[in-house]
Image 1 (spheres, one colour):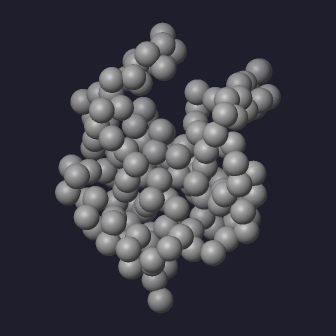
Image 2 (cartoon, helix red, strand yellow):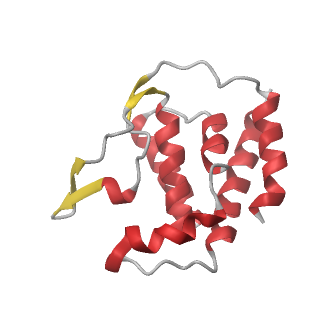
Length: 147
């Protein structure tokens, strides 16, 4: 379960001390599929900027990865990361990835179906396992990048 992986994740975060140095930019802080508007298969708008502020773009990438894991699959979350890195030409610092994923709370099931509405039937049974898979991927990538 994710609870078992959290001490390891905190260890990765703790080993690195403070967040890594970065060049902050304006980020959403709640970047997820429910805040993306599409028309004819194209992204047309990003809404709900109430938490928008300065920060590392990895924060938004990690938040979307967490949401993709919760609602769909770890594979989709990993595919998004791969596409983001290849299309942006940047590599997301895994510190942000791990930090964002460990924010998951099992109580999320209480509001997710309401947020998803009729657009999606939330699979609560597999939610923890999907998040655990994404966290395991982030931790493995973190280990690979250590000096």
